[in-house]
Amino acid sequence: MRKIKNAFMTLPIQHKTILLIGLLMLVSFTFYVSVLRYVFGIYDRQIYEKSSQVLNMSSVGIENQLREITNLSFKVMSDEPLQQYLLQLEKAETGYEKNSVRKKITNRLVAYAGSEKYVYSMIFIDNDKNIMAAGNREGVSEAMQNELVVLGEKHSGANAWYTGGDRQARLLSVRQVKSFIGGAFTLDKLGTLVIRVRLDRIVQDQMQHPAEDSQLLITDGKEVIYPTEPSVSEAEIESELKRIQPYGIATFEQGRNFVARAHSSYTDWVYLYMTPFDQMFKQVQFVKQLVTVIFIVIFLAALVFGFRFSRSITQPIAHLIKKMRNIEKGDLDKLEEAALGDIPSSPQNEVGLLHRTFKMMLQRIRELIDENYAKQLVIRETELKALQAQINPHFLYNTLESINWLAKVQKQRQISEMVEALGFLLRSSVNMSEKWITLERELDIVRSYVTIQRTRFEERLDFDMEIAPEVGTARIPKLTLQPLVENAIHYALEPSIDPCRIRIRARAEGDKVIIEVEDDGPGMTAEFLQQLQEGQIQTRGQGIGLSNIQERIRLTFGDEGTMVMSSSPGSGTVVSISIPWIREDDDDVQSDARR
Image 1: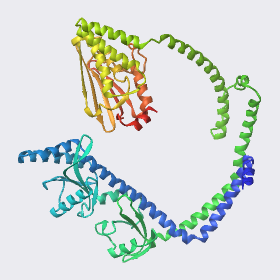
Image 2 (image 1 turned 135 degrees about the vertical axis):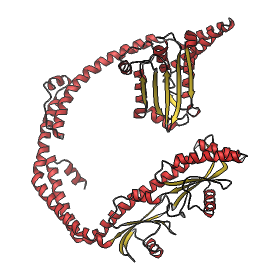
Image 3 (image 1 turned 180 degrees about the vertical axis):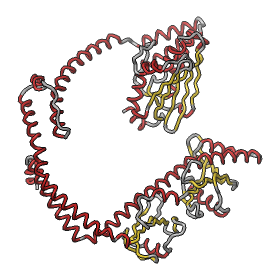
Image 4 (image 1 turned 180 degrees about the horizontal axis):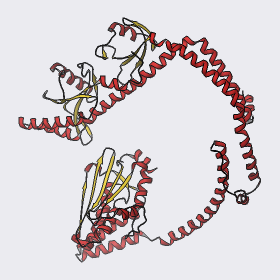
């Protein structure tokens, strides 16, 4: 086998192509004979493949929607406002207080259930057996409520499926709600959340190209979950579940059916896809004719185009190899001579593009050699300038500490605060070992900068922040906000003699952190704003330009990070940054973002 493999690998491409075409014809002929011989065996397999494909795609779609329902119940259970209402309900003493809180809980349930296509109603049963419902709660008797509460307690906070509902909502999602404080579960039971699921609508939407008169049946082994009125009896279903093979022909009262079976590892349900057997028989003749036509077409096409196809590949490649060998015999000094002339226009196929790319490669190599030489000179010069510009930061810090001490001795509180803020700002800026810091630390840098600027502008600088507590530990690239505040002072505060308000807002939206820097300055025109974002306008300060900040966000987060700047004359300016929420203890996500 090794000798045969080596001999094949050393053959020219033209010979390989002809050999592969010959093998293809042999395989095609063998395939054709096999189809004619085992056509009836293929018949059952083809029906099963079609049925199992529909069944698998449909079952996966149904289970995905059930997972969405599970996620919805968890989302409702862990909803912070709802948790607060439930805790208030537990602590309420008067009937008025309890009714008021129950109304808030109901409104919260309505907010979730109203936008869900597959939710018939959403019910919450508190510890006093009181019911708060969003939608229709008919069909949930008192006895069923007790069963649902017991089922929720049995699963202790996990989602459980209850299949004893009515015709409108046969399937119910049950979850015991526990107190969720500070991001951790406690053992305090707050009640039971019940979601009545429109399983019939889920099945109708997720059925993938069902065959004519086919039927999907879902059972948990004890009772039929879908449909509510099955066309087969329980004994027939039980007999089908005992079948060893996952598919076969079953005889029911309604006639013979081809039945494909699939088991769900998520819900432990069994899906049965039943298709009338006699209606599928006509496909056998179609398959036989299709195979015959395909074989004849492949055979004729291979005879006509095989030889021409191989020559169309090998001849241009041989010509290109000849050119490459001419370059191989020379040295790098001959690249310029070999690359002379215009780039030829070639046919837009793989071989033509290969010729064109080879010609462009020769020209590019010469350009890269010259460009690399120039870059090396620039790098040397930059390194020299960097060495010349170095200073000892500790000397600067010690000097600032001396000034701060002297100011405190002289009881110059404002000078002391300004020096301390400057020292903190310099340490944060010079220390480049940390490229990522928390939002809280970034805001400390901004506060130090604002402290310094307030000494200059006094009451004209009105600065405040609205920061959501949960995003304080979010990780962001260092020195992202300070340059934005600096630009706001330069463009909004300095040109005017009136007070200027600068505000920083931060909040969470899903898995995103939204940070906004807003000022009520004179604003900018659309043309000036575009030039500023593109880096065409020289900034008044010596800090980081907006285009640089935007580029850092793009390089760090890719398409997930954006910076949008909006402004108009007389209405101020807003810079909005949207980045993924990387928490302080999320090392894996942080490492991915850094890469």
